[in-house]
Length: 172
Length: 259
Image 1 (cartoon, rainbow over the protein chains, first blue to last red):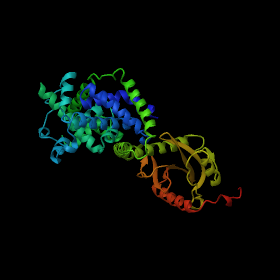
Image 2 (spheres, each protein chain N blue to C red):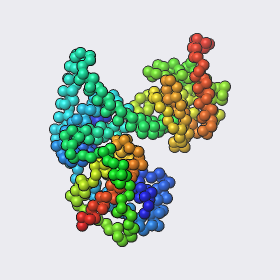
Image 3 (cartoon, one colour):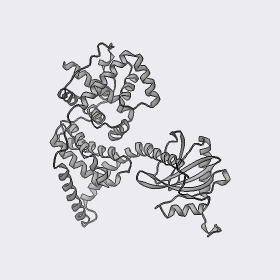
Image 4 (cartoon, rainbow over the protein chains, first blue to last red):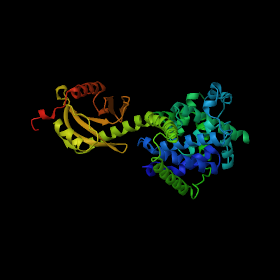
């Protein structure tokens, strides 16, 4: 059972862990811990969506691992004040200005620029972008993994992308 | 650009709009130069993110995971020999229970069971209509259908006779939901087929229309039932009533002339 549910998603699990922890060594630890958790908890698997189930465990493991081993690195949404959270999920002041099509320049960014911009994002926005663009999960799966409503997935995703674009454009 | 526009644009890029909303949005894209520019910019952001080289899983990680699992297996065997009220076991159970069952199971219940399972039940109905007959065992006799289920499933639902209310039992079949076989009872109402799937779950589903079929869900102490049919909602409500009433009658196999 465990072999069919968790193991096929190991490579993806590693990729997600790498983005959440920020480095390859920590990611290995997280994947090992997550595999153990999944193995022990395999009975709780509802035979429905193995991939989302596995990634939920990887994400939760990554955050508890970070909290234990790198407490300074990570801020959780739950730690944010109401205003900060709103600010994260809603339109920032930047968005109020009206752009013309000509102003919306196409940016050219190399992989390194993008990677740095992603690292600068708040963790809550970064994980959404990673799950959507790199793991290519659906909104529903992301909502399940992070345990937030689909509407929040949508607003964070939109906000995260806008922030990335802003970061990449000010870089020039 | 308003916030709803922005969310819709994102959802469009992610292929998350319904087919109808997609067509409408594409019409707007053609007409709206600003929207189109934003769309192209989102696409170039996506291309850039996906171009970041992703590292492969390190060599040996799989092996290290396996050996840790092996140690855990060995540890679990050893642990069962320890006294029953070991604090470690209790603490581990509490932590694992809290972490895994609450966060994972609740979420799975909330999203997937509802959507996925309902979809799979309806898929079973559609498949059965495409087959030569919508059942594996053909019988208008509930004392044939019930034992047929009983011999194949760990738990089988009651098979009430609802003929008085116009719902004629025609047979039963096994559907597969998740990876488990489940019982589906087939009734006819005039020219319409009703598939009634009994799921070993607790929570019912929201009544909804999937792929043009109406679904109706209710539960009793043993099962969650999902009825699928092209009947109007009102008739499915009558069917639920007929089925629940019929289920209340005691099943007395010895009353059956054949037994």
